Amino acid sequence: RPPAYPPGPFALPFVGNVMQILWQTPKVALTRYANTYGGVMSFRVFSQRSVLISDPDLMRTALADPAFSGRIDLILFRARDKIITGQDYDPLGILGTSGEAWKSQRRFTLRTLKDLGLGRQTLEPIMQSELEELIDYFRINEGRKTDIGLTFNRSIVNVIWAIVIGKRFSHSDTRLGQLVDKVNKMLQSFNPFHPALRFRWVKKFFPNLDIIVKTEGYMKEFLYFIEEEMAVHTKETGGGSDTGSYIGAYQQCMQEAATQGKDTPLTMSHLKANILELFLAGSETTSNTLLWGIYLLASNPDIQRKVQEELDQVVGREHTPTLQHIDSLPYTTATIYEVQRMADLIPFSVPHETTENATIGDYNIPKGTCVMFNLSHGLKGSKYWQDPKQFSPQHFLTDDGKVVKPDHFLPFGYGKRVCLGESMARLELFLFLTTLVHKFWWRLSDDDPVMWGKHVIFNRPPDYIVFPTCRRE
Ligand code: HEM
Image 1 (cartoon, protein in one colour):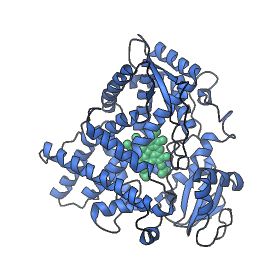
Image 2 (cartoon, protein in one colour):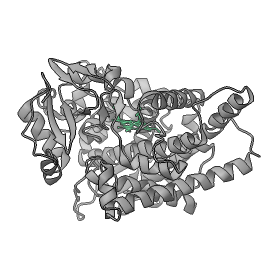
Image 3 (cartoon, rainbow, N blue to C red):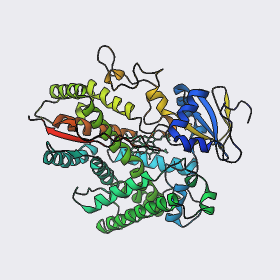
Image 4 (tube, protein in one colour):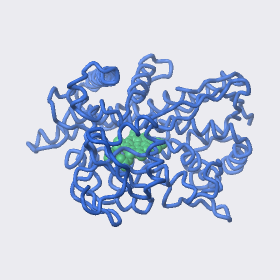
């Protein structure tokens, strides 16, 4: 142990604490570690030093510190990069890179999403088109048992597609179904705690391991899909670059740099990796939060009714919610925050790595340590909420009905690597949830059991069946 290193359990030679973590599931094991060893503790995954930060103040301090902004080497991303470039080590994209490569792709993507108007004006009509199809679908299913498992994925994947390539698929287009299926399968098989997706030597010794073959297979299929669609896009735009899409803006900057003979960090390989990551990071997260939202509101009819009353009063029964209403609906806003708190979607965020020797509180954290952030602790800890297990929008309301967002509520992370799609996701959650609750009454089926599954990185909602009923104007 290095001096002033955080406390932690005894680690076995070679494997470290990995058996405990995989045996109990990462969520159970890490929650137990945090409860036993406190706000900053350490453990080992094989030979890799790992630290878990649970104290929300220390979490914010570390997340704001550039020394904590690296990413651990995720084998899955390296496999993808090799498929794209044919090279063994050339890290691509945003989610799995550190240092300059990460900074340049993140900066470009953030700026472009902003320039494309993904504040509000451009995103709103894209979302409204998706909502029209969704509303038609639920109207057709009015009063019937409906499994909405992958319904939201289609809309959310389509929103990302519209931003990336500047057009949308109709919900009946089989290519949209294929895209949803590929993103879904890829994420289902992704487990950053599994040694096969963490350490290169596992693949060397066991190249045919099911998890490796499946994950890489899904990754390949998804990349081919992106390449094919990019080729169609280039043909349709005549090889020139349109500025109405992420691909267009990226290619335009590449062309400008080439014309001016300037070096640029923007390359076709990074572009492909970035697109894949926008889907990977942006679709299941938002779709699953919507699924949680409908589940929690259908399970809590009093809260659903209160949201509808506020919407009827502010928006009017004959109108549809728009992003203009976002600041005038405190109860609804508090309900959406509460959905995110209860969902606790990515309990331990995405693992970081220290890029230099660092300190947190009284502890030293050496360079190259994997650092995990216990977002779940701030969302569910009994120290921070009156009744953490209870779904209650009051958690985010003052006595006089104003919205409050406590510092320990960090569903999107915080600081240098805070979720790149946070503002987009917030607008999506607002518009989709308000419109769906304004237009329909949601009731859980009494005859079909709610089925909870076991999940590794995402806290998915249970499988459930609902009855949507139209609310007449
Ligand atoms: C409810 C929806 C969402 C939640 C809860 C969520 C949450 C998160 C979290 C916790 C992280 C990790 C932060 C860290 O490493 O410290 C993250 C990263 C990221 N998210 Fe999101 N996210 C959501 C939606 C989106 C959307 C819509 C997009 C884009 C289309 C997106 C793109 C990304 C990217 C690219 C990263 C990696 C950032 C980096 O490594 O610098 N996310 N997100």
